Image (tube, rainbow, N blue to C red; front, top):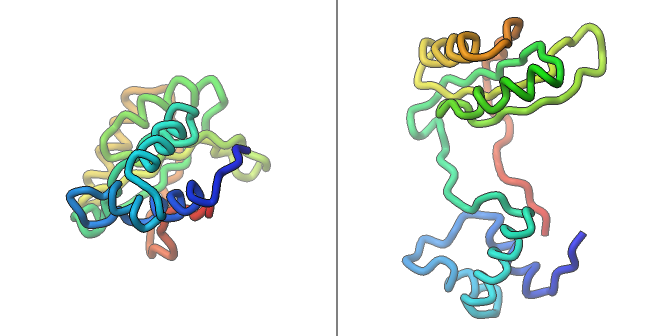
Length: 157
């Protein structure tokens, strides 16, 4: 695990939350962290280059944007099938998450998971049909979201 200076930890604490509503958000972060904008950008670029950060961008609250029907699709898939189907499913614009997690018990055969956000039930059904038509995946359980209990980014510092 990399060691961070106190200033770098301050920067990371700030970028884990909402970006400042500013024309110069990195300068605002720098000021709040007690450093300059160059130090903020240097740290974020370094972490991106090292693979600690994949991307840095806005997150839309999907319910407020009209995507209030959600379904987690749990698929029966061995590793080879998941490796082939995962990129196809993940590339669909209404799929926000796609994971392979090997099953640990025989009564739960599902090992690949895709989270779909749609404007209605039919839009989510279209995503299921797309995945079925374009991959070798066949067996699945559709787990519809009833209530959001928690949603926020992880906090590391």
